[in-house]
Image 1: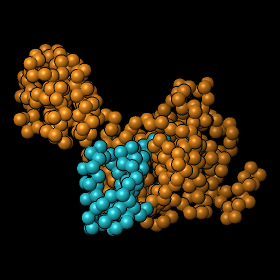
Image 2 (image 1 turned 90 degrees about the vertical axis):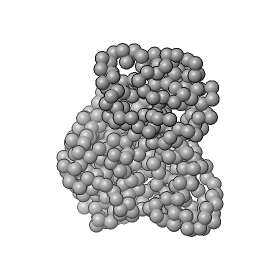
Image 3 (image 1 turned 180 degrees about the vertical axis):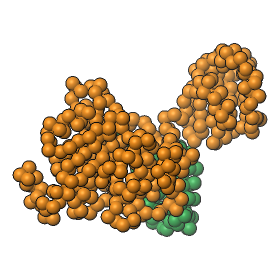
Image 4 (image 1 turned 60 degrees about the horizontal axis):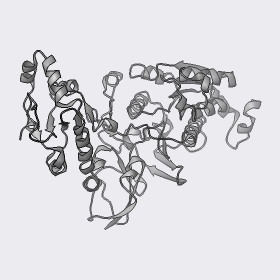
Length: 77
Length: 385
């Protein structure tokens, strides 16, 4: 199935908006690992994942055509 | 009341709303890019008591966006100058200053004396501290953070939502002792972004105090000034079952809020710092990036020989979760080595030994009891072939 990937903050420097093919039943924990494999630099960056505009925990299962957004905290002020 | 005539004409905004603002006590932490616009709007709206907490002094690079300050203020305390300017413009409001800034030692006492806290800092660890202090004392706080052209804003622990309001840890979890590595880089910033976000924070404070409008609780707003796009992400309290938050004042004071900065990765390490880490029981992997014929050999510690000329071919062998200290003769090639390794494996925790083998030799000669020290370091798998 397909998910749309968006990113914010310094993660946008590594991950451009794109569509990703994943297995059905993929959890956010597994999705995180997929991103780590694809973009090793993300291992150092803390980020939360929102699915269809709602921040979810790691056990959340994504469905077809979900929009996932990778969200790091912003430190500046 | 003539001063506030225009806001009193707003639907829903009554003289009682104005009185609530006058009686409110607001703590503004940080008088910089976010703090200046937040402070001036809070004072303009008629907030009666404001505490400004900032330890920092004014430098020239602040002046483009921290417009409570002028060239004549350089070198002076931000909190004291902000107090002076606001007192001149708004003589009716009471302003207190904490020019030590907010510290783990004084934050609970400060937060306790206020109704709302505004986070105008530029520090992630400070945000976890503010979050936990506000949770312990049941106070709402208004968060904003910026990165380049993007800003985030939310209200955490909003008391009116009766225990349902999420907090910063619900959005960004934090485990003591396993702190996140964050980008502490002083990335560029445009004055308009901090101006918008700081103003936005004051706006949320006004709604919290007066009870009018919808407060941005359980909702993180993200605004991108580059492409004029905004996003609203929802979250809820209890999203992370194991928040690992301090439960008492005493726990809070002992809690370790240290976060690691990404800038500290892939950097130089001194002989002394490397030795201290080993003595503290930390595992280090030592990599000699010189060619195999080069002398003197590195004495006292087991090393891997991965010459710079072919360093990339060794990259797959390097482990995660271990500090890897590359060294050469004088510390120049090892810097190149970590730069090249970082290109192929950015997830590694790489260091370059400052001064190289020559510095290590000198360091060893100054260590009277080096053999005794080395005997105290436990051998570990990361240092063996």
